[in-house]
Image 1: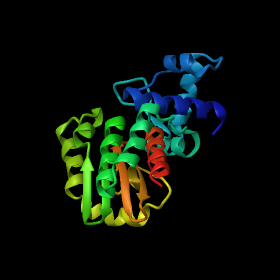
Image 2 (image 1 turned 180 degrees about the vertical axis):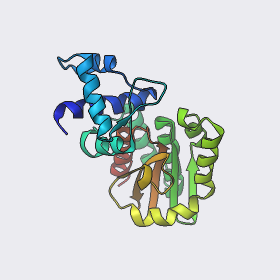
Image 3 (image 1 turned 60 degrees about the horizontal axis):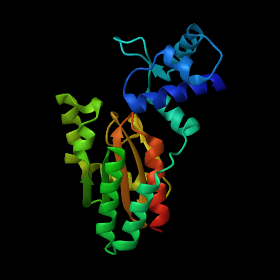
Image 4 (image 1 turned 120 degrees about the vertical axis):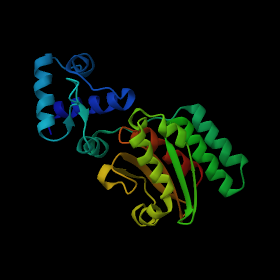
Length: 226
């Protein structure tokens, strides 16, 4: 993919992550900094769609990322978010003040869910699972209809079934699984890592979740918690 298409894809993904609204050519003319016209950008968007990176809802002229578009973004274009000092300080205080390891990790999960607005699953082993932030996940635009709520509820009802695969899939590095690659369902994305050698810490959200923010948070937690 050439640099211009990469820039436009990056802008579309990041705008859609923030707004959940399809992105149009006029927005890209303003934000891209490129000396090109709206018709030229529309042609580029059309080509990105033909390549499978974008699609468009029938009711909108704007584009949204596909699963392939998100995958290309996280592998090639994503920048890890700089975590606010206030959040970093809260993590540091947890590391310093909470000596009970289980309570500490649960507190990390609650903090991450609060910051990201996503659900967080902690698995100390495949049979000892804690999760938080489900109400935040249900408040996302993608999950407000009854069918989506049922689908997401099933994720947590059958959490233990998916954890065996997760323990095999996720390593000590931070992994991003999107759509078809996500054992919890193609409507979701997740960012996950091992902690303490054995446990799992998983941030789960819509495919539109802010992967850069989640990666940044997990890196700080792992760094400060040793």
